[in-house]
View 1 (tube, rainbow, N blue to C red):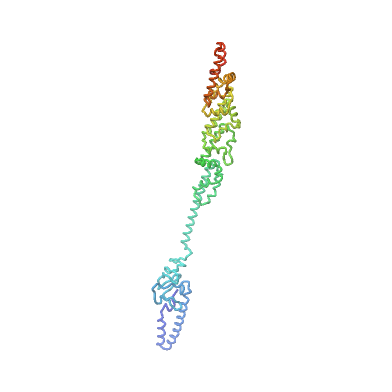
View 2: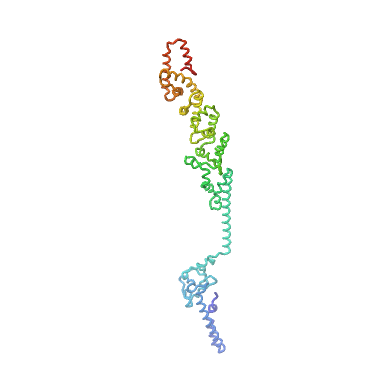
Length: 438
């Protein structure tokens, strides 16, 4: 704001004009009187101007004019606009000056720095809450950079999803990955996709065997390992001619019949060994073995014989033992003897093989008829197949069975000890059984 004329030229000019008019005579005196009146008007205008300074948005007065610096005195320290003071405070635009210098300090509770009110402007005169063109440009660049980063992150998530989808789709499991497609628009790391996928219901149902594997102290299989084992199981079953119902897939490719194999950590080679045991030792063996198997385990039929050996709840050795029991029973049937499931399983538990069973039952068949006949003749306890089996196969009671046979033999020898040689020869021929004599 420009100074009033009084401030511009100083009071002495008006006083000098009035004195000159009085000293130069009436014409000048009249002129001097007019000048004096003009000066009076200027002073009144100046007074009114100073009174308005307190209301100006640019210059602070009684409430806005900045306070005089600490320690100031005289006119510059005068804070009352009504008193005509504050002549040392001026303003230019939005900036306040004290004695011509940008004012810094407190005035009526308002902080000024470099002449600018800090509640409205910063120390450089920038209006608070408003941005300059440079600020707007910087904000625009920052916003563009942020959008670019967000788009790059979105592309990374899209790429992670695509990789995951393509990997699962190789195994026909692409539909599982669709459950985490929403993550593309989420603020998550691409590395989280696989973890989030494993938490979905569809994933857990598809790879349900993993939960029981973990409970059993086994590690969870990766999807590739899981599907790879399923494929191996399927190929083995198909190669051995098992019905397709044993490896039928659902919409997600899951083969529920394989869950127990996976939970039990059954390898492909172990599964094949089980099937081969059933096929080579049962289905392709002599009919007596198959007959014994059905006799011992009547709940199975021809269609289930292979599947019977695939029960993962039983150890492979137990399954082989049952097949061996059928082979032992078959050996008994082949000699015209009875096949007893309990005896056959006991013999299998003792480690008797198919070959040993065939040899042993030949011996049982050789001694059983004569032993049974002699027991009837001499009124001894019946000599049964079980008695002969106990002695031949060294089963429980084998010593007693052997003693009973010796006793019958001694009774026979005592009864015919005095007979003629012809009679002894006839009896000898009768006693000639199998591989030896009773």
